[in-house]
Length: 127
Image (cartoon, rainbow, N blue to C red; front, side):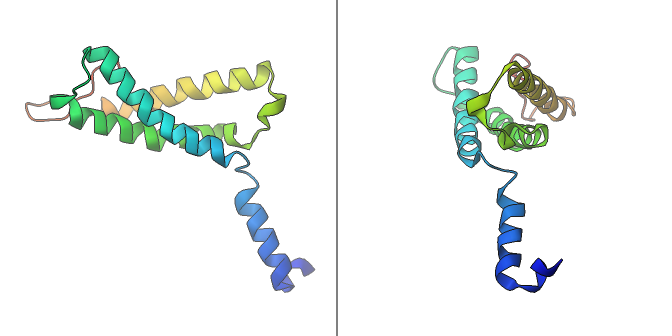
């Protein structure tokens, strides 16, 4: 391993280790933005009004869960390390599986505790 003796080579190797698995960084950023938009739209469609007045705490909890869990599941499934120009049926099945697992994973923490009078709840139809 003579590469690790040379500082330039070591820096290049570390950069490759950190950046290479995440080829589609822009997809990650767009996913984060679209997760917030999708959460808001799902609340608006469910409640049939644009004002989330009493539902803001639930919306923030739902959005936080989505912003944490979904990118982790997608990263672990390899969604961000593929070349999507050459996507096929295999990648479509990967996306469907990762999306279903992400949705199921968000449902578990949202339903972990029983609702009380002052607690934040997420409507069951949204999880």
